[in-house]
Image (tube, rainbow, N blue to C red; front, side):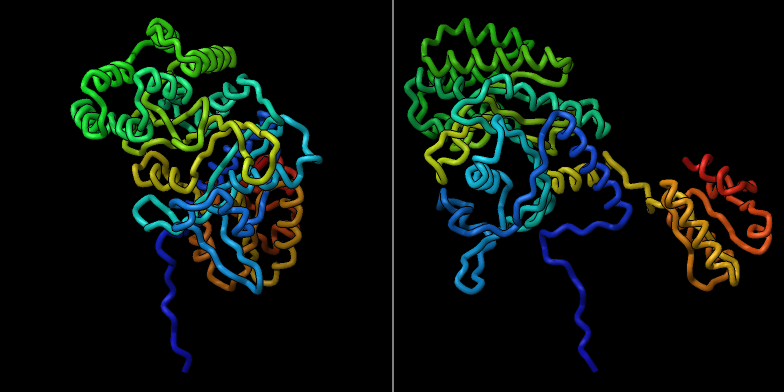
Length: 435
């Protein structure tokens, strides 16, 4: 006798029941629809890439977390994000693309990090990026909060905010204070909302910042007001650093343009604590937060990078983009009961054949399907009550029983399963009713 293997899923890999998968797919479709509405073109790159391509940047956590393996003489790895494949794709197909190149990609990525609650080794990323050839207008940076605004509105959220900053402002400010270890400072400042202002100040002193500069940093990152008031306060600081002034100018343009797109100011604001990828982003940076659920953290983030593909080409390819980590977002929203999976089935109607009327049922189902109505036929031998119970278990809205009387009269008893009411209708009337 063959030994039975106990089925189990690897830690860090998400599987959903059909009702949850339906909701997940609806969210994915909403994101895709909004990406396409703003002119982003679909892209699908291989899940497996050459290791030398994925690891061109080399070192760090990426190399530790990557799934890497050998097949014959080929050293290959599973992609760990969608940005590196985008860089490779843009260079490889450079002569076939029109710039600015606006693309979206929705797909699974893989990271061999320690599996924990809400963190996955396989997860969906939903990315949009705009890539320029040598240069890219700052006006592009304003489009991404607009896309996110409409996407999250359609996903059913009202209370959310896209927080914006510009890395040039941060870099210029810290240079003005003659702080060299800006990375440590930025990482410390990023903890403000979690640990509070006193602990942040203590950590700043620990990393070598003087008390005077620590106070200036805390005053700077806690500047408040409307977007335009914050911009005005930045201008009034009198900082002459060119990077700082350029960052303020760019942020002003982005804020004005987002308003021009008609996004309410309650849904976007300047936040001088936002830094994002410390060795990656060079200009505008974004983080999106659900206002009533700050513990979930950023549900969508991104920013401007000066050179997408410096490891693959001498061409300068500046870009700006954002990413929604859909698997993590779905898990967090589901755990917090912010979303609820209700639909057990995608079927509109189930046709139930009486004995010997299977072929008539199939023909009826085919006509309904041709009319665009999601239809299934119950094909198993069972008592009528069990068939209705099956439709109920899947929350199928309507059932149609097909027997001798229905075939002879051309009228079919269609039952509303929720109301427990039925009426006799022709095929044409059924199609009109269900459409």
